[in-house]
Amino acid sequence: MGLGKRIGGKSAELVAQEVQQRTAEQIFKVLGELKGGAMKLGQALSIFEAALPQEIAGPYRATLTKLQEAAPPLPVSTVHKVLAEQLGEGWREHFLSFDDRPTAAASIGQVHKAVWHDGREVAVKIQYPGAGKALLGDFSQLARLGKLFGVLLPGLDMKALLGELRERVAEELDYLREAEAQHAFALEFDEDPDFHIPDVVAANEMVLVSEWMEGTPLSRIIAEGTQEERDHAGLLFVRFLFCSPARVGMLHADPHPGNFRVLPNGKLGVLDFGAVNRLPEGYPKAFGQLTRIFNQGDMQTVMAGLRQEGFIREDIDIDPDALRAFLAPYVEPTAVEEFTFSREWLQAQAASVADLRPTNVIRQLNLPPSYVLIHRVHAAGIGVLCQLGTTARFRDEVIRWVPGFADDPDDQPLPIG
Image (spheres, rainbow, N blue to C red):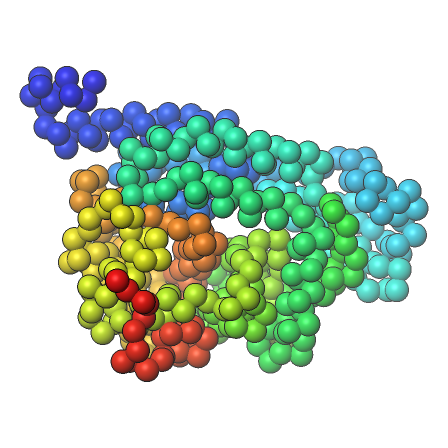
């Protein structure tokens, strides 16, 4: 169809745009039939959305917004049935009281407040019956979209990305695995001056009981906080994300405002450890090294490193100047002593790459499976910081916690060649 239109006189660029728009419509049709799986894919692809024009990205954003709206709460009878199946018919004996009204709902479960049998206030997280089967079923549907995404994002290895996402989602459905991660964080940050993690009280495959935590939701700081509160919360938010791989060997991989509280003592409280990236060696050293070398201006080494790490596939050629222009704003917070994140800054970055030409750098980049969750954290984290409008010394946190960034400037970032 495209060739026919070109012979008929339409420009190649206009034809490409029409083909891509039709492709996007097919993608959104499938996305609209899905729920959790599409949401996870949307989170992973959030940065690539900036490469699409408004007429294509608009329906994509609308679909994800609809998917992310709070699900209606489970009927009380269903809640009790899950508790009986997971904790036994005498489940009420574990609690002095249990509030049947959920205090929060998420994509795969909801949370109830209760009092444990020893008098502790607890949060009881209950997975929706059938959530696992539905979510994993979504990925079978999403696999059909691999070739379609190839039209929009030719540099992306969609099959590998979907495979990695499916494995990570399967982990999020395992509350015993989540309990293990949460307990590890709670132990490491016990009596920490900056952070508080509520410890696990009890867990089963579909029920997770942990200590209750009061505090001001980060969403309220975003909406109503003073600049001082915003700066404080934003700095601790970044410090937590950067220090966790070094201290716990894991990265909290779902950093949206609903998972964070500012406690009365000023500490940052953190919830929901279903999505964690296990990084026993800490952050990949190449991440810090290539960021440092980019700041030094050596684009050839940066490009070679990105290719070796899998961000640029073998058959893709990228213009170094275009890549530098694309990466510069995202690396900027590490290049200055103090930086202010803002919605305007983020919008400017999105506008700079909203371009359908084949040479658009973002359409040529790949997301290696090992970086899926790291990317998810960085993309979502930057969004939160821009909502907060935080000004702080972020570079200090990178120097302290990201391997390779502050190493000897003469050392080589990667064994290239």
